[in-house]
Amino acid sequence: MPEQLSTSRCDAPLLQAFVNNRPLLVKIAARIIGCHSRAEDVVQDAFFRLQNAPQLTSSIKAQLSYLFQIVRNLAIDHYRKQALEQKYCGSEEEGLNVPLHGGSPETAHINFTVLENIADALTQLPQRTRYAFEMYRLHGVPQKDIAKELGVSPTLVNFMIRDALVHCRKINGARNDCQPSHI
Image (tube, rainbow, N blue to C red; front, side, top):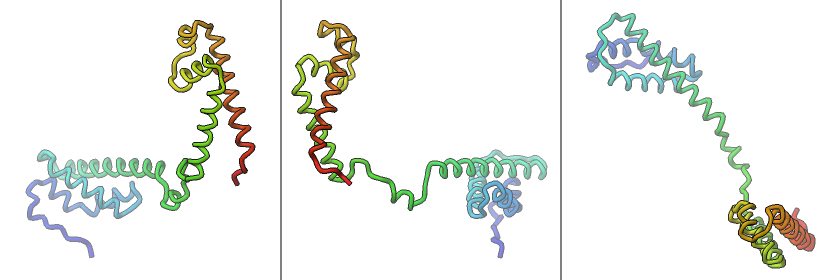
């Protein structure tokens, strides 16, 4: 049974035209969106917009064209929003299979061990090499500024940073070889 709307409060001719043509407006929106219930929502949004619309005293044909255009524009906006949401949103099942990076205690322990290995490796480096590496890698200081501060060439600073990185990788790799492998 079709839903009956009360028109007793519709003083404006545009709102009266809306109420009289509501099923047709829902049909237009449903063709664009592809879902009857969402089309109902679009038509309801159009109704709320019309309550604040200026009074139109034009012909019935112009009023209907205006209503169709409003519903059409809202339906297109709704369709675009829905398409964007589908592009970036997944199903609930997909969300359950997302891996947690760094979330497990094992991963936290492995990361802590790697940091300890790097800290130990840095203590084995000459002071100047360690300083150049820490300033560049941890603090983001440009190599040319480090070179000026240490009174050496930027090329030498580049070699010191490279040597420190190679040393850290070597120490970390040697210690990880002694630990049991993770399956």
